[in-house]
Length: 99
Image 1 (tube, helix red, strand yellow):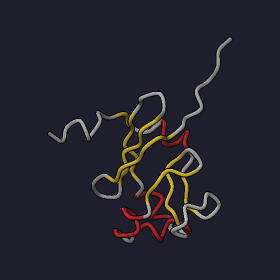
Image 2 (cartoon, helix red, strand yellow):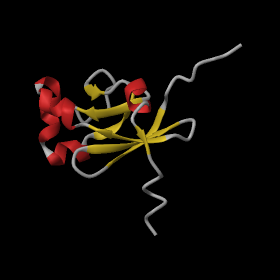
Image 3 (tube, one colour):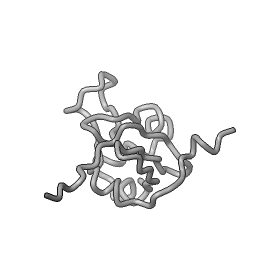
C-alpha cells in the first residue's frame, strides 16, 4: 500500500532577498521565495519588514511560520502550506557550505 508523504518542516532559515530555506523530516531542503506573496499584500505585508521577517520566522503547525504574538501561539501566526514549500526548488544544505 502506497502512503503519500505529508511534508513536515523541522527547521527553517532566512535566505537572501526574502527567501527561506526549509528543512523537511524526510531530509529534503528547499528554498522558497516569499516575494510573490509579500507583493500580494494583505496578511503578508507585515513580512516586508526585514527585522520581522527574520526575527519572527519559526516552525509552527509543522510548517514555516512567522510568530505574530511573540508567544509561539500556533493560532496567531502567518504560516505557509507545507505542500507548497515542499514543491519549491530543492537545494543543498546552506549550513553545510558554512565552513
